[in-house]
Structures are given as C-alpha cells and as structure tokens.
View 1 (cartoon, rainbow, N blue to C red):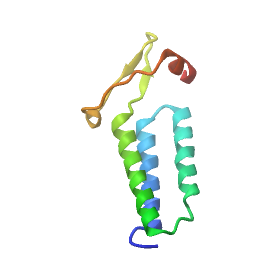
View 2: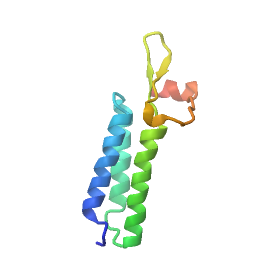
View 3: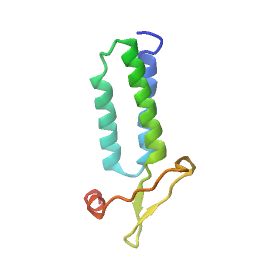
View 4: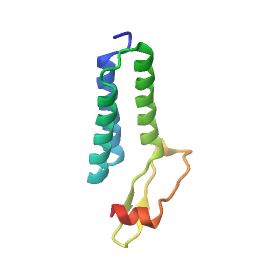
Length: 108
C-alpha cells in the first residue's frame, strides 16, 4: 500500500467507532447498528489497493467521524415524557432538526 495504508485504515476504523460510542452513549440499538454499519463499510473496502481509492476512503471515514460528532445529538427521554437535547460545544453552529414523533416512537 502507498503512503496511507492498513495502519491508517485501522486507526480510522477505531476513531469512527470511538465517535459513535461517544455520540450514541446509552443507546444500545444505535451503538449496535452504527458499529455494524462501520464494520460493513470497512469490510466492503478491505481489498482496495489503489492509493487514490484508499486516500478517498480514508478521507470519507474522517468526514463521517466529523459529521457524527458535530451534527448528531442524541435526545434523551426524561421522566416527564418529553425529550431533552443537550448539544455540546462541538455542535456550535449546527442546525437543530427534531425528528418526527413517528421516528421517536419507533426508537423508544
């Protein structure tokens, strides 16, 4: 592999998993599904050898990690039956989009 190879792919994989664990902490379903999706994407590209393709895929993994950490905030159901959203400083400037009741009911 070229300048960016297997070692960097492993680091990108671990970084993306770490990001999903932080973002979806306490949400077992999302933790499981996001880890499966990350694994699937990396497995699909395990045999890529083109340096251009490797660079593109590593950049996509980095962008995905940045997107997840800055653009997604988990809403938590509070004892009063409503959802509480606590964006962190990493979410500064992001637009808040509230999911529909249908989506929220499916995930509950």
